[in-house]
Length: 542
Image 1: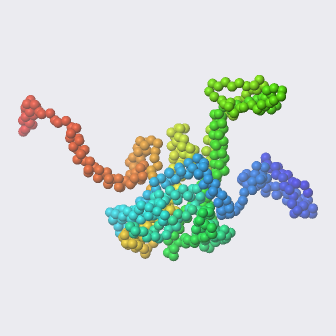
Image 2: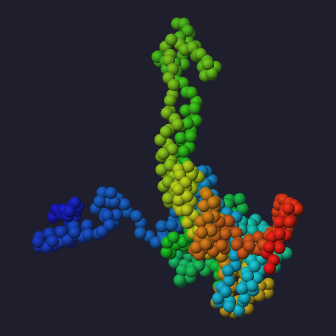
Image 3: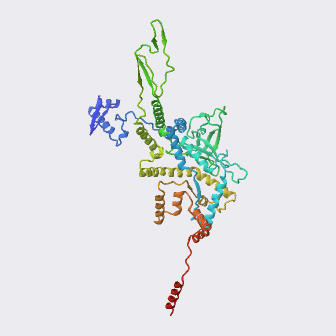
């Protein structure tokens, strides 16, 4: 039985007969033809060209169909190492990560207590405001100076930088939350930051259904323990014998003991992937190409001369028939206005590498655009280039700001809010924050733990337009002064209003004195003016 070809529209499909086809065709050629025709029609019945296997363009495309961990974990160590290497040595990779950290974290996300006043209806507005201010003060005390970190390296706001940066570089990071008392601070909550490489299966054991890349899970897939190497796998100075520690994910009451900070992009994903993973190869090629172009430009700045000679041995020149002497070329150098003599059989050729390459900028621009698309950074933001137009720059900033807001929301939910909840819970347990029903009713606890996280202001190209737009939104009822203040300056309108009232109280007498000093005194009325005024009064009298 020969291969069967069927043309439907513009498509021609060729089907190779299988053993079953040959058997059917042997006993019933008619049924064999119908069978082959049906197979040909099934081959092109799909609606997606990208899923076709009979097209030349996709015939060799055979992606794996594994779950999230199957396609991630095997490559993860190499991705981490290459991502960190690019961050150290590639300007565009380092710039991308630094720009994201600066815009998302900046000086740190600040907490603003926002209790649910409908649930806590027993509190007046004044009492609720006072409780929120006290909660924020207690949180600042808990994270005061650098007692927040077990190594005395960070306070809470500084720690957000290292947590977010580690997540971008390595894919994820872990934060252990031990209880360590320290003098001068009533709070015992501390943080211990663990690099992603240290969380791994003990003794390099293979993954199982309940143990994946150092994360031990229960039957539902929830993390139960984290297995942490005592030293980094790449540390060869101290660890001759590798040891592991077991850290519980939660305590008996469900409170978090370890925070696993990463962005989960697929169901069933146990570990995070570095932010540069989709463009690791492209950035490496980008850096290599840039280095080569720079080297070529440097070489082209040097005048390279090649001496051509018809002598079969250019290093030797006949001085007489009996002796040959070696030419001394060590003293011959190119110089400004220099004239160098050549032998009669020699000529020169100047090397011209055609650099700088006029097409390099356009090529690098196109590559940078692809890199920016993959890591959610517009080209203008990635390369800090805002010379195309005002509208293009504004659109780039707006698009990147959406990414910044989503990352802030995620960082606040996975790292900042759990820290806030643990501190406020400890403050209530210590009796430093009055919160009736907090420890008994989960609904009341949730109402007290409400918090908004505010980062640095966005900034605007044209401040006048931004302020006018904000004022118009407030006037039309589309926004509030508190929200616009937060968006424009990152400030707190309520506190700013109190500060303004204080400033007016202090500045009022001085300003009034300045106004009086600048106002010229009224001239003394003349005798004629006084007589005219008396006559007017007499005429008005009844």
